[in-house]
Amino acid sequence: AQSVTQLGSHVSVSEGALVLLRCNYSSSVPPYLFWYVQYPNQGLQLLLKYTTGATLVKGINGFEAEFKKSETSFHLTKPSAHMSDAAEYFCAVSGGNTPLVFGKGTRLSVIA
Amino acid sequence: GAVVSQHPSWVICKSGTSVKIECRSLDFQATTMFWYRQFPKQSLMLMATSNEGSKATYEQGVEKDKFLINHASLTLSTLTVTSAHPEDSSFYICSARDGRNSPLHFGNGTRLTVT
Image (spheres, rainbow over the protein chains, first blue to last red):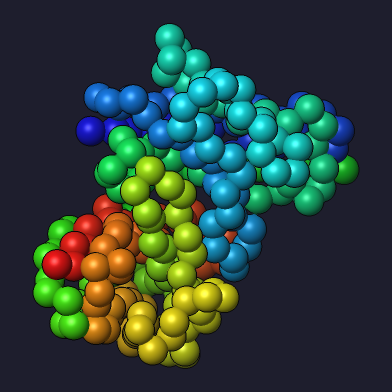
């Protein structure tokens, strides 16, 4: 079984500041990890995913995440926030052949 | 907290038959529901956006006549896979929210196997 915990339901950063959205997971099998973004009134968009291989994964819009097995974490980062990054972000885990399990989401606000 | 319930959690059907999957919001009114398809070891693919009382908006490449979506009430949306084929075998996941700025809640998914 898998589960996901996203720390912080709401994160606020200044434009140009570092974005750090935290995600911890648990999985009884090697995990597949995903970050999604959702803008108002839209469906989920995949930012990046980790399946196997390199633990530092780069995604769209300048986001990246690092899989740390020892910490069971998959935190999402972006060096410099942009106003257009304001959205809701979801971390998700799968066991490969199991349904995705989502975290509760983190709303990112970017302050000018 | 808010809960989205999907039913059934898994279903096996024969090729050529139709299958209906329900997505219910248990303690809130869902003005918008999303239907996704998840292929094994892969990400989600948004199939359609369902708004209560109006026709669903389908993503490019999704066959409207094959994947029928009905959002007849504020607590129920259904996805019917018509004339199912083995290639339709997949996980189907719904999500729902009760307002523009409210959190998104996910169902537990339905595993469809077409034999």
